[in-house]
Amino acid sequence: MICPFCGTLCDDIEVVLSDDGKKILEVMNACAIGNEKFHHSQAADRPKRPRMQQPDGSYKEVSYDEAIEYTAQMFVKAKKPLMYGWSSTNCEAQSVGHEIGELCGAVVDNTATVCHGPSLIAIQDVGIPSCTLGEIKNRADRIIYWGCNPAHAHPRHMSRYSIFPRGFFTGKGQQSRKVIVVDPRPTDTSNMADYYYQVEQGRDYELLQAFRTALHGHWLPDMVAGIPKEKIYEGAEVMKSGRFGIIFFGMGVTQTLSKNHNIDAAIMLTKDLNEFSKFSIMPMRGHYNVTGSGEVLGWQFGFAYGVDLSRGFARYNPGETTSNDLLRRGEVDAVFVIASDPGAHFPISSVKKIAKLPSVAVDPHFTPTTEICKLHVPVAFVGIECGGNAYRMDNVPIDTRKVVDPPEGMLTDEQFLEKVLHRVKEIKGAA
Image (tube, rainbow, N blue to C red; front, side, top):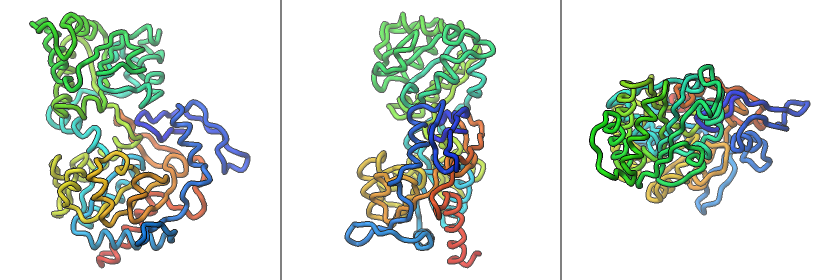
């Protein structure tokens, strides 16, 4: 099976079912978080029917038909609805949702807006020399983790693809590789590193440019971003001396000072390293299909996130067409959230705006977002109770598979969105 937790999309999961095929008994090979996700789908207290918020703030169960009607009417009445999330559902559901957005003049945005959006801007600026995780496993002897902690965020990433696996040209596993970690604080990942650089908070850009300078043997001041110049020269030599290297970077680089300019510098460092060796770079994507959301938006509208369809054609301008900016300025009049949890991760000012607007949360869990939205629609777990396509963090598409049936009568994301789309077309007279 495929694990639908993080962007690593582990494809070696084994699931033991009960004799009747209705209950998950055991999950093998998954990390602790992936294992919990499979078992959580079996929880007796999970929501099974839509809930509508009442005037007194309480919630009352409604039918799926009522939920579909409310959602369709909300879209039709709104002048500029925001459709946010998409990162924990399949590409098929994303495609249907985007059709609703196009029909209703919505702004379609995904979770990249608060994580790897700056990476996408930088890639548009300077391109990206990347590769697949399989190439890294088989070839890479220089591994750099910058501003990320895969030991906690992507627990099997190091054992399957980077530090520990024995690849075709890396037959000794960890002994075949040198590992560099750059992070402002010590982590479980930095404890495994051969070289650890404790960069000063927010000064990644300076250190990236210092490595570029050191690669060519040029002068450096005694300290850069809290790192002695001797360590920088040493790290540059380690990078140059490998046969194949990879830079993995996370939100510690994308969401600190300089944002997309950090990634510009990281990509240019990769380009410079290719004068001496073979080097690639890859963002450590979080949700298991956030990459797929950007891919689907890209091939449908030309932009990977923050796509404004309110004028009848796709516009894209991060800072103007992205979720928090729209909410902060009060420019949207309805909010549709699917497969994400802005209530737990957005600034409180944005969360308060969502709570005041007509809003729908489509999610199999109870979350902070489902508790502030006017309607909560529970759906099947994608990758467990229904299949569908997802993109791994290296942009490789992988088909997830169904393991067990969802609770009786429960819709999938795709089925719910198709019904909403059909109803929107009926209301608009476009069916």
